[in-house]
Amino acid sequence: MNRFRHPALGLLAAATLVSAAQAASPGNDPAALAKIRDAALQSDYAWERTADMTDLIGPRLSGSKGAAAAVTQVAEAMRKLGAKVTLQPVKVPHWVRGQETGELVEYRGRPDGISQRVVLTALGGSGATPAAGLTAPVVVVSSFDELKARGAEVKGKIVLFDVPFDQFMADRGLAGPAYGQGSNYRTNGPRMAAELGAVAALVRSVGGANYRLPHTGATNLQDGARIPAAAVTVEDAMLMGRLAKRGPLTMRLVLTPQILPDADSYNVIADLPGSDKPDEVVIVSGHLDSWDLATGAHDDAAGVASAMAVFETLKKLDYRPRRTIRLIAWMNEENGTRGARTYLEANTANAATHIGAIESDNGAGRPFGLRASVPAGSSRLFAPLQAALQPIGAGVFQRQDALSTGDLSGLERAGVPSFAPLIDTSSYFDYHHTAADTLDKLDPDNLRRHVALMATTAWFLANVEEPIGRAVVPAK
Ligand SMILES: [Zn+2]
Image (cartoon, rainbow, N blue to C red; front, top):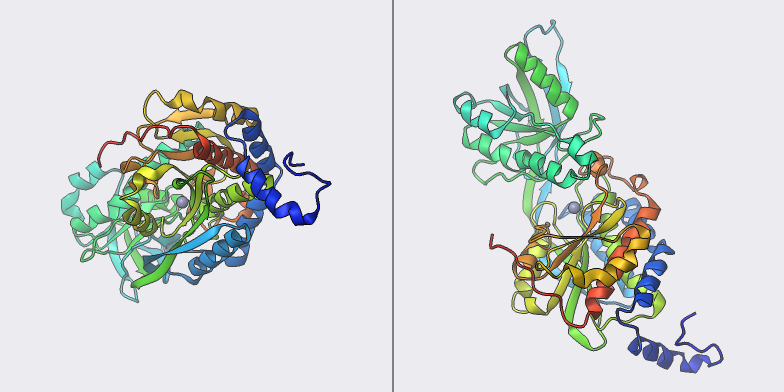
């Protein structure tokens, strides 16, 4: 029972009482933070919204019908929670997958009539082969240095970057760095191969759980040198490596993706106005778009739904923050970050009124605490928040100069402290950007913990007496 409501008073008085309760919302006292945490732990709102987005809509790549449906779905849900909803127009790239097949057609020791199928998937931004495919010799390299050393061999060939994902690191809490060093090849390898005259580029999938699933993702090809580019499964990369050691290896590759004209889309922005500093803003966010191979449950329906659930938690408690809490469901994180750029352009002048920005975009594993780009020495100011989160094992506070996440990095460079849940990502890259990123991979209990972390953090930042220092971020 809310202590501000009196059961003996009639319905007529209820509306006045709600606003009286909101005006009297507690600030950052430990009991309020604990109440927010516990209310989040008792709600399946985030799970239900994740299920709506993944089961009812499915894949949500920028420009697709699924992405448009997600905009509508989230906006409607936020209106239902009483938030003030704005759709911010964003022009997004519109890349669509086509056919994708690979076949090893020549190699030493190949019996007559035999060829080997390769399981692969186009990378976002990949160019296309002719409709009938292309056939070319394969050069397998294990590093950028090897690519450079063998640069003269590359012209007219298909380059495969065979670089393993370091699951050992991932298992021990370093999935982020493991992904970073692997995805560097996916992001930059095809462009470098194109510059050396390669006719196509392949990368070994960046992720764990080797069940012959290819992991897609964006690649940084330039117009004019947009060669076909795909990720092959770990098993197929290893096979190709072994066959290339036996002798010359030739592959037939069919990739027919298309780049359509930029499409109209939106960031969904929803405000819970602050009671006494409505012009100061704390962002809670996730990204609406997903890759097209699956329903983007971990990446990032769970993040959007957790941010939405911050509003539901506070509404249930009749708590109104001093500053505005703003949900942003970003569009186009995966292949362009146009949503984040659009928001930044519109808000550069008032970056200083953005007190902090939280984005959940590392899957829905169990949260251990927060990563934060706040100035050195300011970590101790978060002690009350840590104390509220410690009972659920989420009291860790990791300060970094910059988080450099997809959607928040621009705001961060503009001085806005960024926050991200610090979560168990040891199995995240088993599913990330694959056909297996579906609702069944999520744990409802972890999702509730996620909301508890996001809601207490948003509340804490929205009510803190003085904004906690601007982030110290080296210029890019
Ligand atoms: Zn993501």
